[in-house]
Image 1: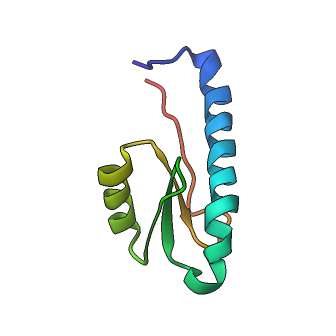
Image 2: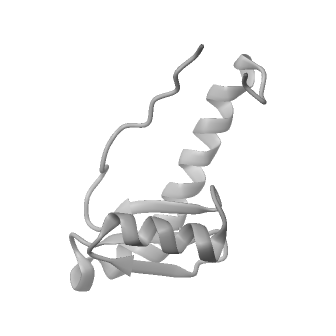
Length: 88
């Protein structure tokens, strides 16, 4: 069961994607030269966690920032995968 009505899911995801892109531009892009290929989690406040291991970054970010409260990227790359929403 979804917590949000279906007609609000797409705008909410678009807003999240926009926020995450802004966080990367501000805090991730300046690190591309030194850390290209590593993974980064960026909190809403601009704190970063960087590691070559994507699972380690995700686990540390969830512990430190809270689930869903950070942007996650591979530094220097446009995307690391696709998100899919499945419906029952």
